[in-house]
Length: 329
Image 1 (tube, rainbow, N blue to C red):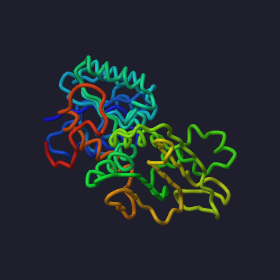
Image 2: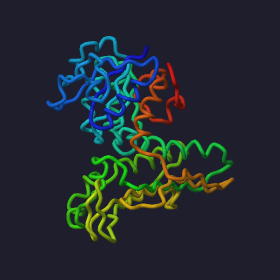
Image 3: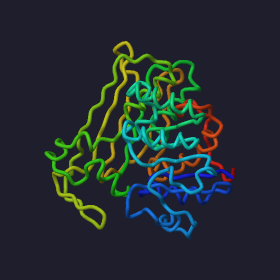
């Protein structure tokens, strides 16, 4: 039996509770959330399931059965510096860690000092720590890296993730600025952007052993060309319906990695497309794209065995045994 502590019980955390509960050989022995409205609630009932007999507490140290736990899954924050103390407190409890923090997915180039602190601390405590998710963590970095394994040589990698944001949960739509005016969008750019594109560029470069001399990123709003109103959305013509971000990695001043992320209400051609230019050159497309909420929860569950097997320290998806779906442990 693998015993899990969940930290962060918002929409993704609740979905993860349901996914973990489905797997034979996995037991949730603790739930952690800072929200006073959640503290004291049964984690099973909180996720729309039957009672687990496990109450949500305010911090990992307060988990009643913490000594029985093996792994903590953390679905709290996107900011690496803000989540650092949560990681260290969890490591103090001797738990291996899987987190959906986007900036944790490959921080060695973007935030090297923080990455080194986390790595050293986890090594000292004898635990492994992995940042993962659908994006970053899989579709725009790990998967294209794996696809290059059939190539004699690679000259350029381009990934496009184009998705209709209407079916996504409200926090995601808020994150990409749906319903804002152009002015409000520009005033709040730092809080609106999709987090993780630069980390994905760096993960691909790490896999390829490409020494990039520059990484750039652009962010532009997608604007509604007509009123869009139904039970889920209420956007006027001229307001923001999403974002388009492009991150580029350059080696010897040549663009070798291009990542295009577009998420907006009304997109009609959702897809995830990877194009490898080399020998051979080829394109792989997932028509309709992968649902981010489902995939993030699923990959968090499916990396548990790989993280338990990993050596201590901060890991990326490139460092662990390739994960796969499993029905029982």
